Length: 131
Image (cartoon, rainbow, N blue to C red):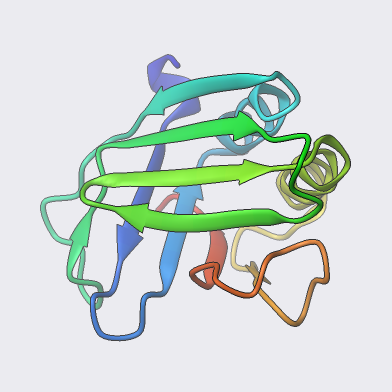
């Protein structure tokens, strides 16, 4: 992804909350990427992640036809997203909708049980626009 489509993911070790931030173009492009079978996305690192503990270095995602929901979990410095095609498409739609319609100051929580397409073991995710 180019400089105009930057993404970063910050994480909290205490709450497990993740913050996915990006430009409108970056969030839209990532949503489109999720519509594929599998892939990776390198992330911009934040030197000042406050109030979070740190930033992740990449996202790895894969379609899993045996999984109905989407799991969103952190392993080491990687955000892993895995799920059934329908659930991945709903996540992609949520990203695209937020990127195209939200005010720059808004955010969206994507977590279980708020969204039933997210698996219960998932880390809570907040989508925001990059500052």
